[in-house]
Length: 143
Image (cartoon, rainbow, N blue to C red):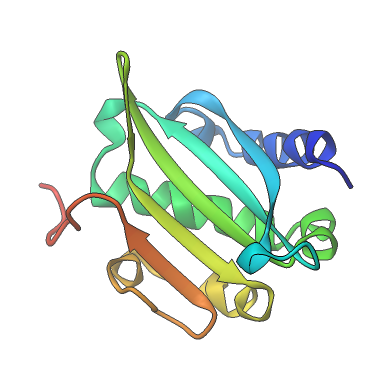
């Protein structure tokens, strides 16, 4: 599978969730990136551009965890990737803000299906799963 095929496949999978599709400002994109700088294994990097009002823990968690569950349970992705990285961005006019990076190694893919909203606040919520924030972590749920 090449980058164009994985991009089409990921877009098709994620567009099947109407709530998820209603949250982005641009369709998601996907590509293969080298795992740990080698060309022996590749992660699938999924970039999701969100509307500004989605910049809260509830919506970010819904986007990341829904995309994760849809993609991990996809047969095409499971056989094509050495891991998965989901990166949501918030687009507000001409400003783009990278919010967080959820990285899951191949060995952690099935366990990652148990992740919850609160787990995204931990740097390493499960073995093989990392969550890095590019902005200040939210410390409470919005009201």
